[in-house]
Length: 277
Image (tube, rainbow, N blue to C red; front, side):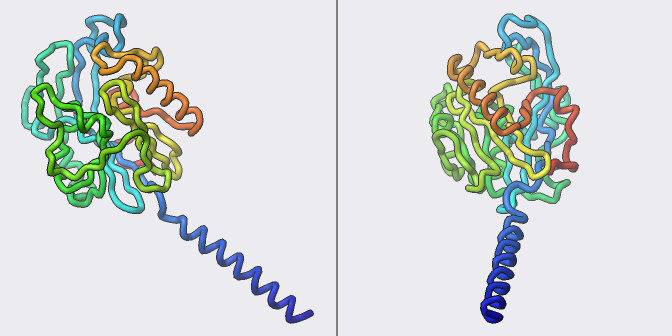
């Protein structure tokens, strides 16, 4: 009887230790923190481009965000903003169409990474929401970093017929949603419409909770609230379907929607070197 009791106690103790070790094994897994980087500031000449028939001729301040994400398996970068070279242009980069966005850069992406002690070669993976210039401006700062992009976006040719990325840049061409690290903490969400292969990013932070980074599936809060579909979008109905998908994710994940170009929202966020956990 005593031997049986001792064995039972040992077995129970080992079970507790095994459970504790399993719990400890979870520490350090997943996304650890997220930095919001200033990847451009601009003025949109006519915001009715993004919400047809609303505020015709009215300008609006825009921002351009990049996000540096520390995962237990390495650094990940979401979007690269307008080109760093614009920081050296005293008047910024004016658009050919005055209704579009006049971009400036007060800080380069390279300088912000350096401030954080992160070298371009440290970035293990990266993704862009889509291939417009205000999102891919610095992709080639990371020539060896694996690029995650929707196959439809990768294969969408420029008007000149040239490819959108250098063929030698390593790329993973995906179709639909994709779990980057296989642990559910960083998931690409296919949101086509603005472009053929537009994607957004769902980030699960340990303290802040879930965030859905919009890319250009939506451009500013009133645009989202009214489900405005820009006239220049590649697919109007696709855009509406993607916004419905995003709303469903926000509800199921109890997530916050962070809208890439919304200045009022970014003004309320802490920027690097501060971070979100």
